[in-house]
Length: 332
Ligand code: TYM
Image (cartoon, rainbow, N blue to C red; front, side, top):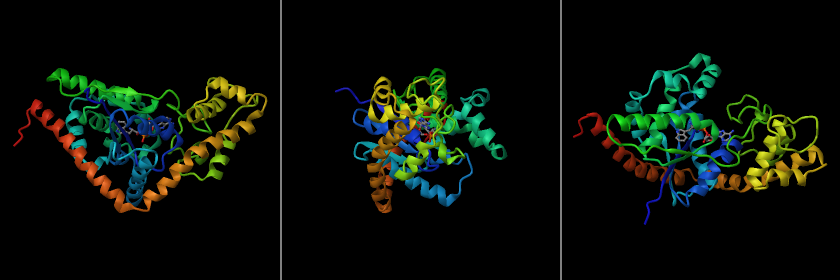
């Protein structure tokens, strides 16, 4: 029997996930767990690169973990754990730092973006963030990394680091490929549809959060920026706002853009926006219900976290031993 390929992906516990996180990444993870050996991680160490309030970070870590399960990740089928519970991530990250160049990290658009937003705290962790991400991926000999389009540059760097290490010694790491969904790979802001939808946006109306109640979702969609020609047509260049809503509608219903255009022909944006809100509300309702149940049983969550961290740790140690041997660290 052929061994199943390994997929690995991570999400930061920096708040409730957005519809972008869900459609671009998390929703696919639930589907992939059927066919791949799946490993999903709440990357709390990555979240430290921006100043966090400790008690909020703690809550958000439980929240992110519960949301992953509520979105369909099944701990019987996939490994789901918290990054800081497996020491190997930080350890491999330090080693890989020595195989990563200043110039490469300086070119990362997320670094440039975040350092302009946090000018008072451009710390070494923020700069080094992609190396920790490479360590996450390479530690598990990952074949495929399901991510949204915004993480593509980081994945490229992980591939470069893996190749560099393999060439310097001998094949050690699997060189991972990205896995991008056909729809929802880049959900845009509802207020500035040329930018990605992000939970760190200061304008709350720009994003939908997975735990937003139905009336809030409807309000945010109704106030989404569109244009003045009142025609539901897919044209990302000239009609970015409407096209973004169409992409969301497509990602949830599976309808093609032509079908959506046909369905809403001559109906204006009001009717279309209400229909978009309806499909989002319908999609999120069962997730919200399941989330409440899971959060009411923190001890239950902790038990799964602990068991899964131990399993992940066993996998991580195997790679680390190999790496240490190749580079000449003494192991006793
Ligand atoms: P994070 O926490 O910002 O986002 C988690 C996932 O959601 C995707 N995503 C989007 N997809 C479509 N449209 C959007 N508007 C949108 N916003 C976010 C992201 O692409 C991501 O897949 N560095 C990563 C976390 C990470 C990681 C890893 C991922 C750490 N280690 C190893 C994969 C493998 C991040 O900040 O994701």
